Length: 345
Image (tube, rainbow, N blue to C red; front, side):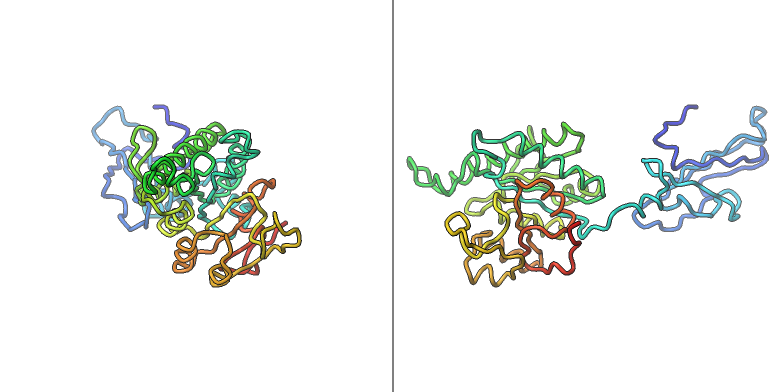
């Protein structure tokens, strides 16, 4: 019988005698944490004339059992399995070669204005491809990435409220639909270079995306998929910055990365004051007391209450996204210190 090559790392073969008889009860049923044992012994019939003395016993072991010295056949300490990583290295070698990163699960907030790029069109394909490639470079390191997208490049509800009798709630719902458009475009770009991606929306749009379910989102992340959250919080009067802070807390992300068109947070508007200074670190209290236009107060307060650090950085500079995700010094850090971060190479 042909054995799929995808199963080879977790299979072992033990020669047994024809007089042996085994059943699934022959194996210990100890707890293996999140991995359930999947071991089965093929029962050999003493009276079966076709059985051979060298017939192999096929044992399928769970991930936790790979590399252990326990022998499920006779209880001896001779059972050896070689654990091979997909790249051809052993698992120990792969873990040793993996660079040290500050965070293992991050949430990236991409504003709609950043997706517009040079503003010649609503969405700049070059920008989405840059995001996709840099996210791909860090997902290969085992970092779990979730993304919240804005919709200001297509429609900003707060700006259109009151025009032609459009009330604020209706305007905000239109803005939420704009974020779904951006999310689908970004998903298509990521999947075009081989990144498995899921879009989850705050209200049901089953034909184009999954509904937001926290446990399902976390499961996608654990499987190495990028999850894009769209439609904000699903409620009017809340910005996508607040949605990013909320989703960050819900999925237990370790940091909120806010990608913008500026290098970070300044003490003044750099477009009006050329002498404005870039602030490397800030506290949540400084953001609120100085009324710095980083995020809306609801989002900052939510991050403060849940001890979520925020990194504000420039999306347009090469490698800034991957540097920020890996925890390198870039932009402005709110609610933390750079001393505990991975220094930039």
